[in-house]
Image (cartoon, rainbow, N blue to C red; front, side):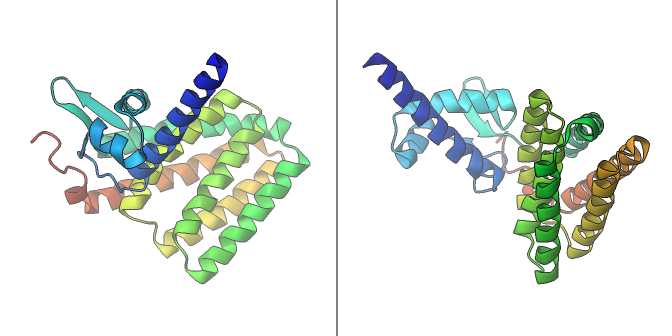
Length: 230
C-alpha cells in the first residue's frame, strides 16, 4: 500500500503544481499578489501541505517569491528579467539549432511544416492566442530536435515565463506576420543544413522578439507592480 500512497501523493502534487503555475502564466494570479496556502488548498480541494510544497517548487523555478515572515507572492515581472530571459534563450536556442541540423528526423521536419501551416492559417484569421502557442511550439520543436533533453527543459521553462508577458499584452498582427516569415526562413536554413545562416537568422529573430517584448512591457508598467511590498 505504501508505494500506491506515494504515487497518489506525487499525482496530487503534479495536479496542484500545474493548476497553480497555469494561473500565474495566464495572468489569473497577478504579479505581486499574495498566495495563501489555506485559500489555495480550499480552491484545489487539498490540504495545505501539497500547496506549500508546490509554492516552494515555484519559488525555485522563479514564478513565486517568498518573503520571510510575510509569505508567498507571485513574482513581479521586470524589464531586466525579460531582457535576461531573451538573452539566455537566444544563446541556448542557437546551440540547440546547431545540434538539430545534425539530429533532426523526418518526423520532426513534418511537425515543423504542420506548425508553420497552422501558424499561417491563424494569422489569416487574426487569432492571437493560437499564434502564441504555434510560435512557442515551433521553437521548442527545433530544440527538441537537438536531442539534448536538458536544453529542452531549460527552454521550456523560459517559454513558460515569457507566456506571462503574452498574457499581459499580446503580439500585434504585424509582429506575428514578421515572426511567421522569419520562421519559414529559419526552417529552410535548418533543412538545408546551413549552419552559419541559421545561427544568424535565429539570433536576429530572437533579438527582434526581445525588443518587441520589452517595448510592449514598457507600455504596461502599471500592471507589473501590484502592491508586492505594501
